[in-house]
Length: 146
Image (cartoon, rainbow, N blue to C red; front, side, top):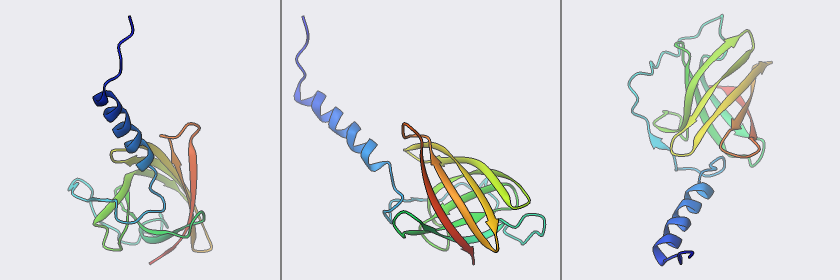
């Protein structure tokens, strides 16, 4: 005989749905987490062989919101709400060759994904590929180096 769902079952279902809905964060500010991973080296010394290294201001082609991207010499990266990098939204590692870059992405408490970027004329075009959506969702950004 089937069981009846109690109030507690509906509360858990509602909580899970809320977490899923809140997971997309490309337009909202202030939902980042405090960056505390000391394993990522913060060396953004310019490197002529890797034009991505440094700090970039990225603007969404979808809604005009902006974030700051930090690409490091050790092959790691992060994106934050603020220019000092302390309110991190996503992070990962990358590989680059010439003016092309690709890497993995971790969105804490939401899911994993990927990034793909290219630089042309001093402008970065960066795509977030959000694997927590079915089908995957791609969000486009353009940026300039600070």
